[in-house]
Length: 108
Image 1: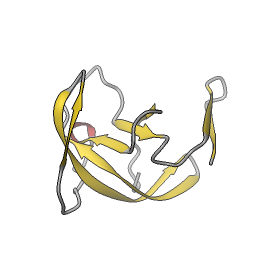
Image 2: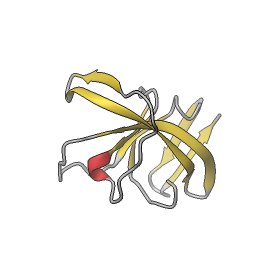
Image 3: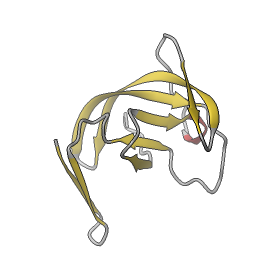
Image 4: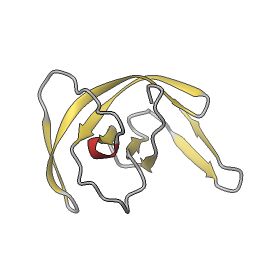
């Protein structure tokens, strides 16, 4: 993500890319504009700031610019991912994981 490696949890129900500010080594600059409030059963109510990642890739596959949100998150050392990767946000029809060979593939 913009020349920064991040660990994202694949979330098939997320509407957009979501990044946890507390997990980023360098702060992400939110876009000027209105924040959105959201509610989650486990996390309660929180504020989403819109962001635009100018260039993003998975492995060697260039995905181009990606819109998403950044949220101030609780710093939890047990959490080993930096955000949520939305399948709907990437407009993917299908995704598959080959854990044995450490490969991911998808179909648009």
